[in-house]
Length: 148
Image (cartoon, rainbow, N blue to C red; front, side, top):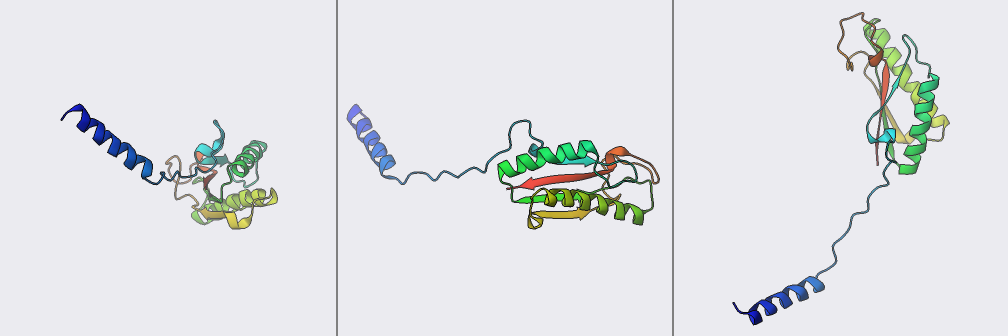
């Protein structure tokens, strides 16, 4: 292959490249700010035997609301959990009350109910495995996840 052949091949390549349709560029969804709690599941913890939002929980939720609105998320999934301090039935109800409190806070702050789905796991999905009847603060929680 000589210089003329290489030049002809490159010319064909350039012409084919220029005549091809431009590549489609996917539009990226807005992303949360660096350091935002929305980069992973947000966890709101509760006091023992309570479903009330603590001042710390409200601070977390205020940040979540701001970042979720800025990132234009369309779906919020909240799942309630309890530790194993009470009966299974009691813990199921307590986990549901906790997730209901989160939903209430979000909707009262302007998030549409249609955007929120909730589940309650009671004591069935602990963050920390414990024996029955054991109090574990990390298991008394609601996990919140987001999707565009």
